[in-house]
Image 1 (cartoon, rainbow, N blue to C red):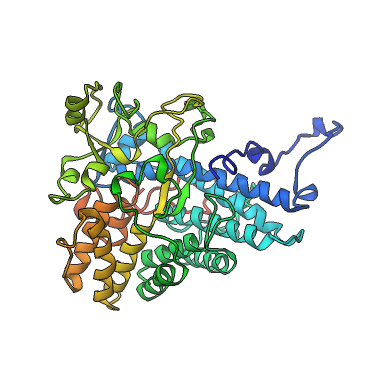
Image 2 (cartoon, one colour; image 1 turned 135 degrees about the horizontal axis):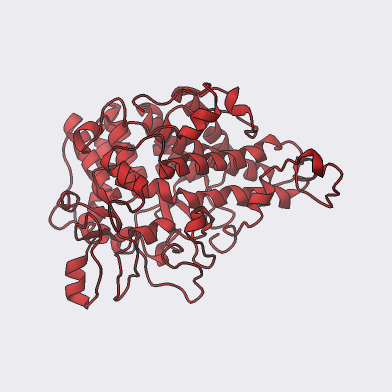
Length: 491
């Protein structure tokens, strides 16, 4: 799919509407794409689906900020004024005027709107593969809405229709419960029509939809439903496994591999610049994570953002193979290889090794710091196992099964059975949460794990309870709504 579905230059044209003033009323328009002359055959539905997938590449900012907002990393960069929105989130002093938080809102709603465009015309034309395409559109809309509800809480919903100018003044923000119900409905319907095997590499599978649904249930403390859904994925749908060699998970050879349940596809053959970061077909976050002014083997230079703290490095036990995969100790690496690097703002000496630039392809284009081919492993099988462990434990369902799933992850991490966990009850809960941090460090989940489990105010410096659980609605959106939408508490 990286080479097939990733290029969607028609996206903005297909999924935008254009209005004209009276001075253009007599102007002949030879051809335009709109609902009246589109969605006439399978290829056109497929093109619209490609355009919806294309927005996934913009989720790089969600991953990057999800780490910076947590206790895992510091903002980094060149100086205190380098991407000020990142710095504010790191310090927990962000306001409704934050360009990077606004990016999350804008780009995720663009994804919702593109998916809803397909759903708006889902009944226009029949063809054999339509259930598959509609199911993928449902998954993608659920994915984008889940990101929005995690970041902002309740959002406006328009269901199977696009948002149009003026809706912001008439459609209210739905409650979080209503948004979650919409997400659940989309995923349940998608699961019924999706296959365990994707029609193209990188497209949605039944397992991906089950994993996301299980995660959505877990975020709402619906432990019985989460356990049932994730167990069904593990034991019935199947098809996934933990890669034996943890060191290879985040390398190109293992993209879309046995551990990948859902993966955002990137390529470095279509470049981008700072004037349009969301235009990049590459993983922008990877370049932001890279060591500043780096010269040496294996890696490439970047902008030294999102730097792991010493406390994060110290979470790993002796013998845990994940430490050297998650963390690059740049001083030790330089001493061993002769590499050189610059020191950035809030320099800790560590970098997020999972997602820093690797050696580039001969066809790489654009700003190489912004156009990296590293796919984002949005849902890994290890995450599924740990979510299942948490659901079985916190729901009081079966601690034996919870330990079984947890210890699968630990056995891969240590390469033996000598580090198995034997706890029960709340002790086991804490151990599962610790394991999630170790396993998923650098992958953008930590902040939301802390929030959903009520631990953020304890673990994150500067976090204010009853405020920082959510991010502010961008000021422009509040103003455009003319009082229809209320700002989140504390902002």
